[in-house]
Image (tube, rainbow, N blue to C red):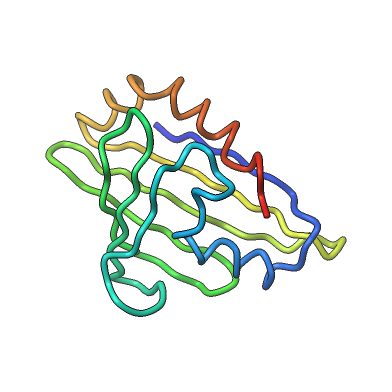
Length: 134
């Protein structure tokens, strides 16, 4: 089960990437996040471990599995019977702006059930994630 949202931002990709890669500051502008912190030293990289805390969802540790600077990154959390994949994608618009897409996929036997259980909450979080985009 996959859910997502997108927003067009009137800023160049490089500027939007700087905001997106500073994920520890996301709770300042994304009310659906309580805390996001890197559990490793150094900049965001493949293999980085990141802990995400959200109201009404257990704290989750993600491992960055893909990273293309100024373009995208993907992180994955796994547990018994569940694999959660979160994708963060930037697309340059012809106007000099950037389209930001966030998508979350729940897979595995438990993941499908979790996806259905959290569907409304995830939809609500997606509607607020960009409310105060910097």
